[in-house]
Length: 532
Ligand SMILES: C[C@](O)(C(=O)O)[C@H](CC(=O)O)C(=O)O
Image 1 (spheres, helix red, strand yellow):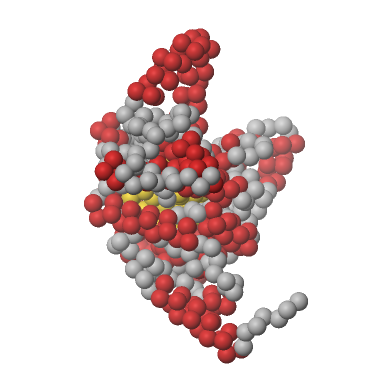
Image 2: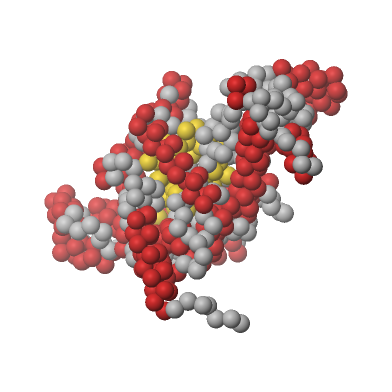
């Protein structure tokens, strides 16, 4: 194998040039808010000898960054929705600035075996869908551009000119396991042309919402490590790709480990000496009892609470005041320090055991609140560009508190929001008027990117079912009346399969003509088609 023909001096020079370029990129207006736990030298040494192909993703990321900032300045927002279908994406270009590729949707429509949103599909599933969609966007852009350019300049004003290259935001879930899988996924996303990906703090293999129990998160540091792995991968590629720090701590009921002191305040334990939850559940199972009921019974018997709640339950008002005053002198207080403070300030013993409630999979019980979400979001913010506190149900007070608290520390922070699942606004106390202006009210809090992630589950299913019924009842007459006719009559015309629009017949013709050596862009000569 031939050796690389480069002197040590030239190798060093190239390395130093790389370091200088990285320093420049990191101090640019686009990136100066990011804080990395590593140096430009480390990243330069991790790079390949020829630059990684991150150009399309970088262009789309910068475009998205500018769009989001323009919204922030104007107090407006981008409203997009999720799809995995290039055909749908081509129509979104007429009304949306961005496209969302949802993991939940991919898990239904892009896998061999569909299933509930448990992020149990292969790690490259969503990047592959992004690649498919981005290529379709490029193709639409190409056919439109070619069509325009085959028309003389004075005709072009009248022709359609859509921005088909809407930046793609995609679901990176929790990174699918180890840091190297997270890096590989991030790389595939960049290669695919994504503009922004989101990474969350959910535990892999424990994403389930179907058994009446809440979600499981990982310790704060594990979440930050995931985000750092993605950031590092982007940096190794020299990519501008945006990182959306999604936090799923809202309504989480479990945490995988108590290794990080920052999480201790929210971990729950038994405040009564009882048998471990697992023993109780095993006995209930052997007796054929309802496990959910047995769990709830055990929780009540065990007096499940956080350590601070346990202190509150046994301390006098004065003791509690002193305990809290001591506690407030430190930022993140571990359980053992809390115990020490309690021993000094509260007369009565505080019984608290967070091992007793552990699940069969080893999870600890977690009591989420807005403060916990804010702390995670603040810790994550320097590694990413946008923040999203994913909520199970819309709680306006929590929403306002979360965004205001984060903006106290990062006044320019941009936020995302998902109108997740079946939000029940009426139940959450929203009036019709409040729902009407919700997207704009959120925009005022800095929530510049808003998504209905699973539109195609509800919306496309509904439209398809309605069409299926009509078609089976009315045949081609119904089709002409309710689909083909209106689609062709619409301005702008809804794309179909005719030569003028979706199928891009003129682009195919242009290729044939080019191969045949015929001029296709003749000055002063319009194309064959009068309408696009
Ligand atoms: C955004 C999301 O991650 C998705 O996969 O689309 C889901 C959507 C949903 O549950 O409605 C999520 O918010 O977890």
